[in-house]
Image 1 (cartoon, rainbow, N blue to C red):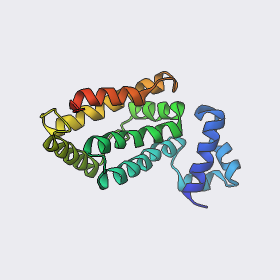
Image 2 (image 1 turned 90 degrees about the vertical axis):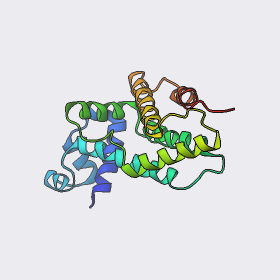
Image 3 (image 1 turned 120 degrees about the horizontal axis):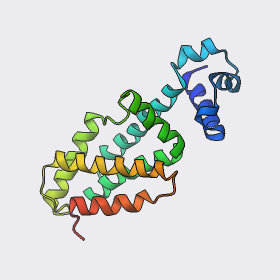
Length: 182
């Protein structure tokens, strides 16, 4: 038994029944374990969802680590699209639960790794130098504004229960913010 088996079983049940309808005992039954075993590996149901964010950040970090043959704008947009893919995989209900949990106590789910921030800023700088990004503003501020735009659209996607084209909205917003050259 390991944490991954418990997390996968829990996520399956959360998707089938909804987070609130799933009890720790249900997860234990799905895995064939006892509650003490569950709590040995996982502090709480919420912790299973909060760990999800780490996996999403792993995907973004891998995306921005290299270069994109289509250029810096494509790479920056692609990093956000990776996050959208991860959010769509977990779904608006569970993503809303992560948000609510962070509103009650900041678990750091919306903190971005310094390596990702530094890399995104470097890609913005490269885009400015190449002329692909026309906004000559501070790369750190442009990164923050981009991240906040993404988070706002993520909130709307959750609020509208997934019935919201945040990919198109994100492309339009980032194109305007970065002043992307055609």
